[in-house]
Image (tube, rainbow, N blue to C red; front, side, top):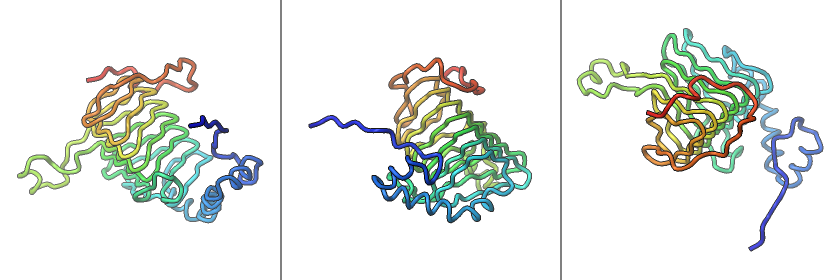
Length: 237
């Protein structure tokens, strides 16, 4: 078995750069992804209408945006959403869904956020820091959606319990994870694929499982650029 090394296949800054042409020759499907991205730009502008979003965004396929008229959505620069199953080899099960469902809900996302085919559902408050990457088909929500008590559920089916979610800078969340209401994920934490996060995760921890438990520690990067997000020092519960 031979060891393989190679150059990183990052996203080219421009469509016709030398790096873009090199990747198109080596991986033709990437060229197709970029062409489709450019073709949907007019529709992408419409999809993002009403959202405070920074420049440099890239939409691979159209996300589903559901914004309550009396809620707030704020997204930083460098947004990267992959809603087309061709745009990621892990495959998006559905377009990215971003939803604020109640008056007063606040969804805030920092710079360089990336997500493939997952859902962000905010009834109260979700705060996400800079450089957070979310794997394919992950769900992040601050609500139970429906009351747990049967009688209340019949009488008031949408009267669910909510609690804010905080995700600090440089967090990496694997595919098919579920981030539940009221949790804080500290800076640089890594959430394993398929994990169910129902409790706080300390900064720099690697967690996995259902419920998610600490199984390791991410490499320390004390010189990581950017601000420290709120909640990054909050202890695990």
